[in-house]
Amino acid sequence: MYAVFPTPPEDRFFEDYEVGATYDLGSFTVTEEEIIAFASRYDPQAMHVDRALAADGMFGEVIASGWHTMSLTMRKIADNFLPHNGLPSPGIDELRWPNPMRPGDVLSVRATVLQARRSRTRPDRGLIHGHIETVNQNGAVVLSLKPMNLIRCRTPQV
Image (cartoon, rainbow, N blue to C red; front, side, top):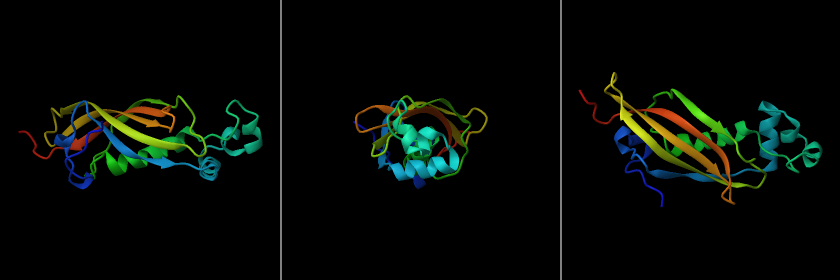
C-alpha cells in the first residue's frame, strides 16, 4: 500500500516526508515515435533511432535512451514528490537502467523515503535520502536511483 502525502506539493515541507513510506508518483506510456524523437536529439545511438539496426540487435526493437527514461521519471518526481519551494538537490547516487524502456510500455514511478534529517547548519531545511524506481507493466525495474533532496522545514528549529 502506498503512503499519501498530507499536503499538496505547493504546501509540502520536510515534516511531511515519512521515513520508510513509499509514494506512488504516477505513470506514463511511451511510444516508439517519442523514443526516436528524444534519442535523435539527445542520444542518437542506433539502438534508439534506427529501427532496422535495432531489430537485429540484442533487444529486437528500438529501446529508449536511459536519459529519456530519466527525463520522464524526473517529471513525475517534480510534479508529485518534491515540494514546490525551490531548493536544489546535492546529487544522485546509484543511477541504474537494469531493463530497457520499450515502445508501448506503461511505466509507474514510486519513491521511498530512506532517511530524513534536519540540517545541523541550516535550521530552515532538511535532507531527504530516497529511492526511486520506475517499473514497467510486467513489474520489471527500468530505472532506479537514490537521490538526495534539500527540503524546506515548515518549522525551523533554533
